[in-house]
Image 1 (cartoon, rainbow, N blue to C red):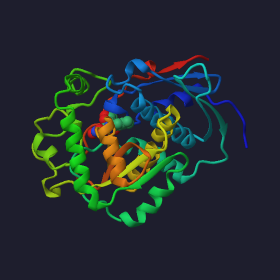
Image 2: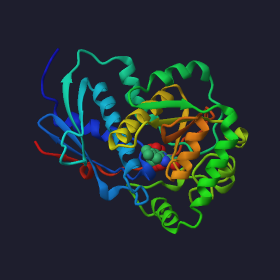
Image 3: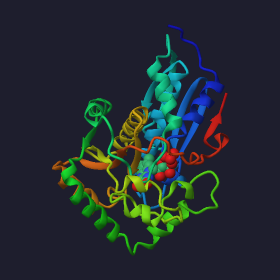
Length: 325
Ligand SMILES: Cc1cc2nc3c(=O)[nH]c(=O)nc-3n(C[C@H](O)[C@H](O)[C@H](O)COP(=O)(O)O)c2cc1C
């Protein structure tokens, strides 16, 4: 096995690819530093969504970018050795990563990296996923450690919809929540936020019973043939609510989304339910567990011949990566 220092260009390209990771409202609350063949990942608290007061969802987003980076480097022939929270005096220093040259890059590692570019958040109604029973084995095997993955029984759908509606009702008059949603979906941001092309119209939203209510767009009715949403609902949860749990949850989110993408499935993270204590309690009650629900993911099919919208924008590399060597 070779043990050389990785070039800064390789690190830069891997960071560029990793930054395709999902983040709450496309806030991209991360910052990278490359120095002498190593990478360090920091939380950017100023970019965290204000309503995300404990930065839990910012940490989930950072966990996703961290795992995307591991995947990108594996496809470039480097194995990541990740130390999480390496500086007890700095809670924003999330990871310090060294790399070892690997003997070879497997097809699977290449496909994982390819899935980073193919993945996107799909908010439209989804078809029931095909080959779900076989895929469940893959899905369950993809998550381990402190994060638990559950697939909600279809019979729970009605109760889940009620919990979703209750959560939205609780925030109906929360003007700061709605102002912030408006800000992250405003058309003038170039590098962050959710573009109109990724949002859905009021009619389309009516067919997705478990989705966050975003400001609506004027898109015509798409996926009429799909009718109402038939996605399966996956829940990631943890026993405690420490920063390390959220980071691990984000890493698991990345793996789940990439596995789904490789299986040809469409995905949409859903977190309005886990953002208010009442929603979290209702969800925990539904699945009959003391675990703390962190994030839901709708998983389903999209019509094969449909044209995907342009990828959502990302901050320029120079803004998120500092090269120190
Ligand atoms: C922690 C977290 C929470 C999210 N919550 C939601 C949500 O409630 N509803 C939704 O439609 N998308 C949600 N997303 C998806 C982001 O909006 C999406 O990743 C971002 O806009 C970038 O778009 P992309 O995933 O298509 O690249 C969430 C993503 C993360 C990481």
